[in-house]
Length: 344
Image 1 (cartoon, rainbow, N blue to C red):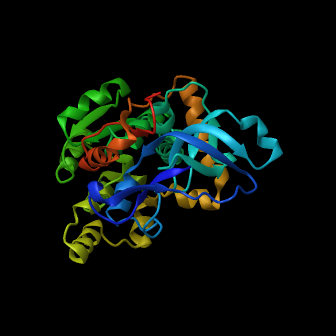
Image 2: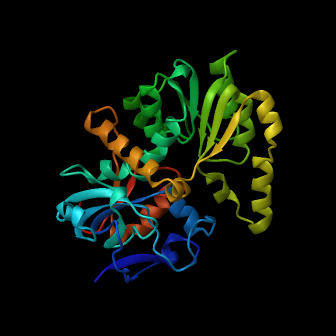
Image 3: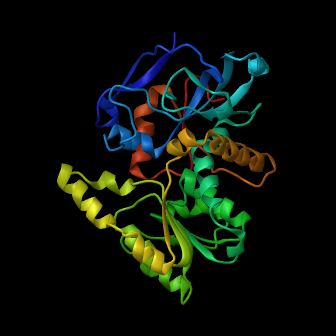
């Protein structure tokens, strides 16, 4: 019987989840059924648990976007060769379960690849690959800022940008995270909270400007980043971690929106700057081939030893609550993954 962790109500991880049977629908054309051995956590899961992720289904639902497992059934004859293969891939929610149905275009065969590396390259790798691809190699030698650089997306972004010849400024919130970045060799590391980092970065840049900023925080950091970005530069917003600090209901939400700001395209046009929101679920809905392209690109670079995810932090499914608390705390580095059985 398939089981899964349902988000039954918003709140703390100790009370928000319930392990219950999951009724999977029949397979449809192009779909495969995967027996899941491990699944990854993403910050959107924390936002959903806190009731602050608008794309999430209504409670109760099974969250989760990326999984590792073995293909058990397929719909199409053309996909029979996948049965018994160990794969990694995406699903649109439902990943926190012992089995999941997803598109055959959203998986890759991984053989005996480490599950932590494989899960790092799914949601987070694809997000990093997609954003880095928006930066032309014509900007080689320019600076890009990566917020939350020791996280799953940030640590991979540093590497994608490095492959393009882009200089990187890695912002982390604590000295403890600096060691995790040493193997990734960012051009500069800035240890700062979201309130004062811009002063340090301006000193590093001197008279130069950023060609891009990759921002998973939002709030007041948006205005700071736009001041640091020069003409032709881009601000990528792929998260709103700052919203978790909004603890006073609608008033805090309105304050978060106020700090983020309201922007007209006219000043952006006049300064030749771009602000780009990134939600891979929406992109996959419209262009599944884009998701498939970046999934395969991430795994190909890994196989060619050009992409090296940070070591994953592993938990058994009995300890899902602790895993969520660690992710929400902002103290983790790399990917956090959950195993249903042994850590293999």
